[in-house]
Length: 333
Image 1 (cartoon, rainbow, N blue to C red):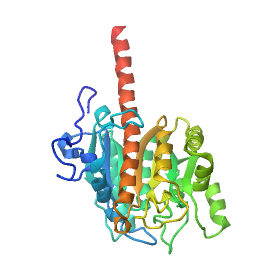
Image 2 (tube, rainbow, N blue to C red):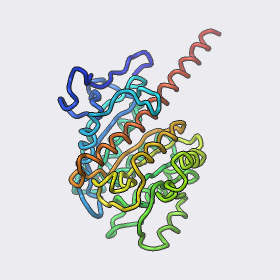
Image 3 (cartoon, helix red, strand yellow):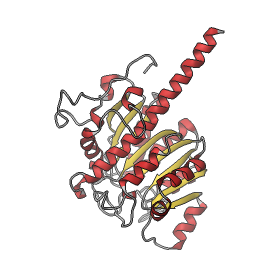
Image 4 (cartoon, helix red, strand yellow):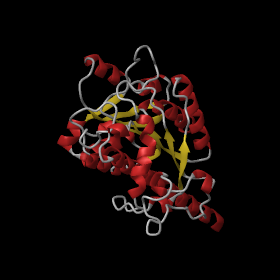
């Protein structure tokens, strides 16, 4: 989209009830309706990499349904994200549910195509396996990226049942492949039992810092966000959010719930505190609606994606304004 085009926003809910019409994310236009987009919201209905409860393949559409209630102005960030940049729903990436290796390649190829248009990705999972191909694609464009990984679990295990691509292994693979900036890696919201002390030792060797859910409770969202900003600096940043970073009271609809998690309020406040970071793409994964009650999990996930989208839209608009000013100054000389 050129800097002179007005973004096409959501369906007007004062004219069409929120419960009517197709459930695109936040009732935004489809990608084929706008041609190009600055932020592509894309689903990946894949959960063949889970180790406990299945069902995250239905997560993307559940998030879309819950997002019908999102409104166009975000007061927490004082921004109208869908007016600042074109955001569109790019539909789903269809991946083979019977072959994980093939699915990983398919997701990577589809992400390459979307990123190749200049868009940033807001991906709705799916299980956490999908983070690896998404990171591969983002790294082709930006080089090794900083990573903030919100999750109850480390997801840096080596293999499950001999399989190297699962929802518990993507970030070990990503470090091994050199697509992450190992000076700026953090897990946020981790908790619960591990297989052994070696899990933490191995994770530290990979370069990860850890902010547990107990740390967030004791120190508060603002202090945690400040710590994360300092670790990230001005590096290109990818944020990957497993919805089980939230306590089961706030996200019961997920595959591997752990007691003692953060609240949805804490998660949203931390994300808002990262608004100055260079966010190049993000994902929200592991929503399993079969275990959800009253759409609690889907609502939390939709608001999480909304905050991430707002950050990206603001940064896109700021970059355009800066480029326009530079052009005016050049033309004036």
